Amino acid sequence: MPRDHYDFLIVGAGFAGAVLAERLAAAGRHRVLVIDRRPHIGGNAHDGTDAAGILIHRYGPHIFHTNSDNVLGYLSRFTAWRPYRHRVLAHHRGQLLPVPINRTTINRVFGLALATDADTEAFLARQAEPVARIRTAEDVVVARVGRTLYEAFFRGYTRKQWGLDPSALDKSVTARVPVRTNADDRYFDDRHQLMPEQGYTALFARLLDHPRITLRTGTEYRDAARGVRASHIVFTGPIDEFFEYRFGKLPYRSLRFEHRTIAAERFQPVAVVNYPDPGVPHTRITEYKHLTGQRHPATSITTEYPAAEGDPYYPIPTPANAALYARYQALADATPGVTFAGRLGTYRYLNMDQVVAQALAIARRLIAPLPSRAPGFTPHRLPASTVAPPAILPQ
Image (cartoon, rainbow, N blue to C red; front, side):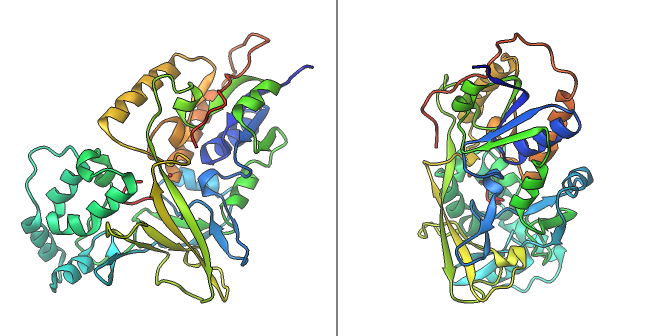
C-alpha cells in the first residue's frame, strides 16, 4: 500500500512544532503532518476547563512574557490578549513575601525599614559573600545577597526542584533571577506581559488550522513512520530518544501535578505561592483565576511536586549533562533530513517566547526549497521504549 507523502513531518504539537507547522504551511506552502503522542495539542502549555468549569493549565502555570515585538506580533495573529502582571509570593516562616527578592522582602526578613535603592544596595553589599570565581548556582546568589537570603529563598526550593544542591548546578540556574532594590513586586519585567484571552489551546488550534496541515494526536513517532514518507523531519521531542539513547539518557527533572477545586472564591492572594522550605514536599501552588480573570464561585488550584521520573520537563544544567548533550548535538549535525527544535530537542531551558523565536528562525531556513530525496526516504523509527518540566523562576 502506498504511503502518504509530506514535505515535513513535525513531531510535537507544542509551541515549537505548531509555529513551525504554521509557517511551513502558510509561508512555505509545504504539506505538513504534525503528530503528538499526547491526546491533545499545545504541549505543556495545554489548558482546558476542569470538571467545575474553571480554565486551568494541565501542566502548571504558563505566563506569556516577552521583550520581542516580533514574537508578540506573530502570535497576535492567532489570539487576542488579556493584560496580566504576574506576582508571586514565597511562604517563609508564616509570612508571604514577594519574590523575586525586593526591598519589601528584605525589610520583612531582617526587620528593617530601608527606604531607598541606595540603602538597600548598601545593605546587600554587606550581606554578600565574596566568591573568587562564580561557577555554580549557589555562587551567584551568595555573591549577590548573602547566605541568609540564599538559605531562605533559594537553597531549599532549588534542591526540591532539581534534586541537586545549588552548589552542583550551573550558574545559569540562578543567574536569571533578578534581585531588586526597589519595591517592584512584579515577577517579570518584560515590556509585554499577557495571557491569551481564550487560553493557550485556542491559540494552538488557530495556529494549526491550515488546509496544508494534517494533525494526528495520540500518535507515536515510530507508528507514524510506518505509514508516511517525509522529505524532512522536525523533531521537538527529546533528542536522546530520537537517537535511541545511543550515548545514554539525558537527565531531566519532571513534575507531578495535583489538581483540586475548592468551594471558595479565592484560595490565595496571588496566582502562585512558592514553598522554599525543604520540609514541605511541594514547590508551589497555582490558582488559575488570577491568571485568566475568570469569574466563578469556586476556584481551582494545582500543587506541584518535583519528581525524578516522568515526562521530561526541565533539562538539568550540569557540566556532565552539557557534555553528554554535545555528543548528541554532534550526531544531529551529522544526520541529514532532520532538524531538532524546542526545549527537549535542543536540551535547553527556554521560555515560551524564546521557543517561538527559535521556531520562526528555523522556519525561515527551511522554507527554502528542500533538497531532493530518494523516493523511499522514511523517517527514523524509534524503539518501543520511551522516556516518560526549572530554574528558581520556572514558567
